[in-house]
Image (tube, rainbow, N blue to C red; front, side, top):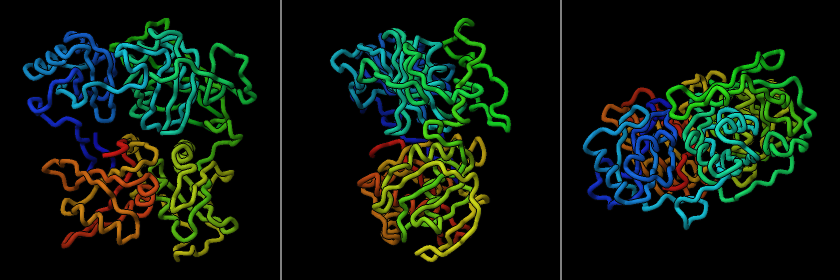
Length: 496
């Protein structure tokens, strides 16, 4: 479960230490570790309900961990003690159990009754490498249980609420899909019950849809029909010169899944409306792999610092400040999906006291004309196509990046083991950026040549500035031949 970067990434620390079951007081909530990548909630229920009734499951897909809450403390006891004596397999892989430090899994709905469900589910889409639209989610959810309404929102990463016909349908969907990938290795679903019990949809488009009211469609952009593979296909159908390629079949869940689609549930093909070949139809843009960024601080932002921030969301080819429009730059990225991710996560964040505006550019490429000197003396144009610091150069490398909105906690990696907390703090003060308030180092394997960990700042804005300035800083070590490149990204943790 490492993240990209020179020395491979960390193994995320667990909330409960290994083998410390005697120190943690018994709890009806069991912390499960060592899950395989493809595991979904239904697999856990299958393997563990023999110990007793399970009332809630919370998946932590990227850590390959989960929390399972039993109705009775005795059931949790049986699970932990049995797992310590003999192997318990979940989806074919041995799992490890311990009491959780929490006595109950917090959940948004109807807190008094632990067994209460809701027919509305809250889906958090983690590592969203590809656009998530109402079509994609309908294709994923509807075979499991009738979907009435979907609303997608982008406040804290990409989240959606899906309203099913009944609580039973929603329970079935949560079990079948919680922890699953929509596309191979990315767009992982984390599912909880939502607070609202009904969704209100005003119009049918990429962001919201009411399947009980087809007349809400105002789709002049229906085009030729767009086809794309859905749950657990490799990726969306690729864009070719003549629009989208041939129709792709809808792939059922992998055959090893506990939850199987019957042949009746699998439509031969799902055809998508064509929103001008990308998810931008709602803003009237044709897709482009160039983003336009305005609101840049005149003396503190330059091409390299734009790279440091935007490289978290896709490869950066070129960056060019516009002479005619002060504080504005064009960023040419690897593809239109990278631009989509940059807009989703960086539009309207604050950097050096100024609010960024990130949108799709009308330009389809960045041409190095009118090169001038920025206030800090650096060039207004820079080509990053060949840099080794791009993080999406291969599918394997791309799938290791955790695509996260900016947060107050930075994940650092590829740091030489001799570097201390004090040295990292000094690095912040030397570069005139805020220091961190909490520090955590992950346990490295003895053979590891680098260390990694987390830095918590007072605010998200501070963390953004530190990342913009210090990402890819070259750490030189005494008698070391090559410097280490400090790598930073936003963490999935909101605090330490």
